[in-house]
Length: 224
Image 1 (cartoon, helix red, strand yellow):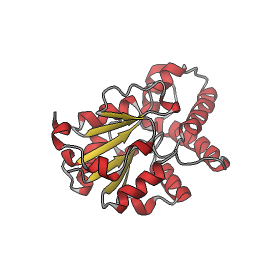
Image 2 (cartoon, one colour):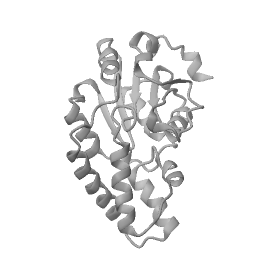
Image 3 (cartoon, rainbow, N blue to C red):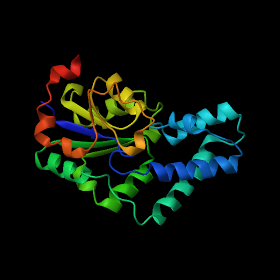
Image 4 (cartoon, rainbow, N blue to C red):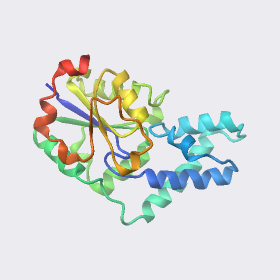
């Protein structure tokens, strides 16, 4: 029986990807580098620190990684606070409330910084639904490495076959499967460049999911 649902945040709970994209590309311009859409798509699901570590090596950037992370974060925070129309993705609040009402443990495991996670929790009053909030910024490796999901499961004491991950990115799905966790891929208009084919199930809207359908997922399907 499934007891724990692990949510990614960006692109699953709230679509901050356009805000991140704006912040990244504005900072890329300041750094004097040109990043293609295809190259940028490969970073989806990775922590900001991991992104800048890759870019520093690739473009031989002279700046410390932490300095670039903070500069991008400042761009993001300003853009996030200035967007009054930023909303949760359709149906996700209803799904979160349904899962919580049925007694499932909910964990957030995102590559976003803890400050960004806290911003989203405050803005949309979601903190009471989640037992743990996990940020990838303090982990040595980013998705597709499975460590963030293995860590999330360990925090609530759930074996991986009693967990489900909801993800929207190629890297996120790969991380969930590498952790041995059943993965539901969420396909939205913003994940067109993401390959969700490795997910155990793919949905186009959260109305396709409910507490009973998730609880009834067979553990053997997770361990295959």
